[in-house]
Length: 143
Length: 86
Image (spheres, chains in turn green, cyan):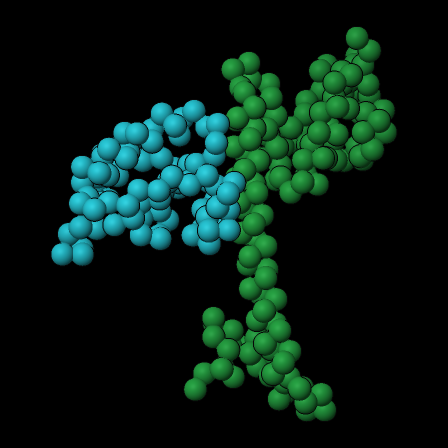
């Protein structure tokens, strides 16, 4: 099996060498051997693994979650259901985040509606006042 | 009292535990409402309750267990609520 230097692997997987070292520190990849000069050498599967990591990051998985996914993939007794459970929980996290962001967007809508007088000085700005007093209630809506 | 168990279809561990938990709940609560919810079909409701892991159990619309409890833990929680309501 041929080996790759860190530079070649970085080029193949379209990441920087710093990223590969970071992945290594996070326990996501490891060189298969070292050259006589002490340089990291990777096997052919490393590029596939790095692409998997990048793709999973794009899907919103954290590096810790990706480590779990890789561990599941490597485990002989693992089945598709194990991966599905991780994916399902990721979806729940994303849906939760979407809900929070929608709520935040609605709060901003309310603040924007409150701020109808564009010529008011900044120290009378209802948006800044509301954010200053942000503790779950909007002072303009308290009565 | 209403007990809702959120599960993912195909989860063998969930399926194995369902019956024991349901029996425990039925033995503890008179007039129990027991629901088993496929999280894929009820995701909005689950997210609304704060479910982030599956399986999970909500009691009377409140997320109580974010992992499957033992039958002993479920019984203890139900008993605590009965006492609180009395």
